Length: 204
Image 1 (cartoon, rainbow, N blue to C red):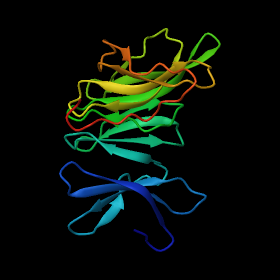
Image 2 (image 1 turned 180 degrees about the vertical axis):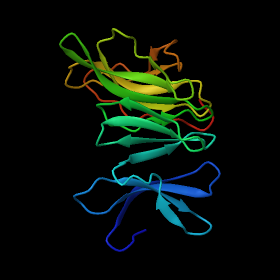
Image 3 (image 1 turned 30 degrees about the vertical axis):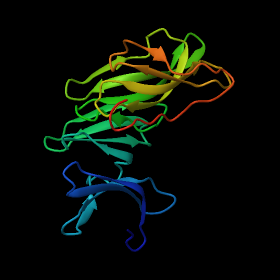
Image 4 (image 1 turned 90 degrees about the vertical axis):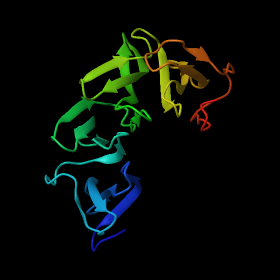
């Protein structure tokens, strides 16, 4: 998908109703990516935002198609945009990792960097863009690095990778409820890395 002088960048993401795609496009190597629509039936394509300075990468749709999430690499923010009324929820984010949508609800999980004293930690957060609330679900004072949150297909669990903050290796697989409760480890091998969990369709 390219126009003269323009580059399209994977991945493109389908809207929940499968009528549109949102993808990244860069005018050149020197310029920032922007988000563009593609209407599947007509083939019409146009920028999501009129402002040419509004950058965006790693788009994602809410389950009901009402919200679009993405990373703004210029402002270093996670942004969530309501497609009907134009509400824009922006949250500073140093990780610049794309958030993951709950499979059924308009909720997001994402990681970000914090400091506990002089120790750098990485915590998981639960974001409700409709209520504009953010909750630290790693545990406010936990000296850990939590990565790669993955929702179960039913949305009742989060699986993710955790290691002690500052450790050179030893990411373990952990599961918990979306509110941070019922946390328990799946692996305990400190000399091995366990990352990028994936679920079976039946949640088991």
